[in-house]
Image (cartoon, rainbow, N blue to C red):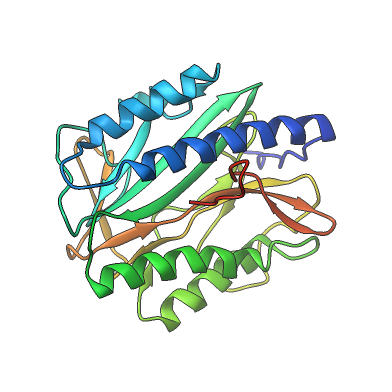
Length: 258
């Protein structure tokens, strides 16, 4: 079977990706602002859908492979693909929110983990390390580097801080389709995989556990939790490879990344 080709975006396509990225980042920021005790994950999901659709876009996740929500909302030990429901958030929870928006023929994809009220020191540090591991990774997202250089940098940083990186799920190319080539792992040795080229658009998304990295699936094979019940955090942005380095596309108009 032939390997899937990596899509290099034209200037017109890059502008469309920037538009999708801004909208997606705004939806993430809205969702994050709603994280507080007593709010249900369904309420957050409904607000995300209304916001995206009010801008003439479609939630990328709604109906994707049968997923029932517009956002993946994952609480505490849930790593990814948490299904929105009537669960009320409580003080001390950590809440990972993953959103995507499709507009003008292209997707944006981003995620972040938010504290619900006051959280433990470990939970706060997990959120901070997960977010910083993304920035450590994209220091390697430069023309001529290899895809695995990103994941290697993520893993080194995460493990140096006493946490672990999920192995079962990875980042990916993103564009006209939500998931494109190449696969972007958050672990493994450097120096492998395709070379990064200007025009590549990829979603880099560290998924980090406070305990072991092993995970298991629940709820009809959608929701993924840590096998040992430890906390998990998720941080993701869609980025563009340029001749001058990486450009984060999932950023709000006022420059916010969370």
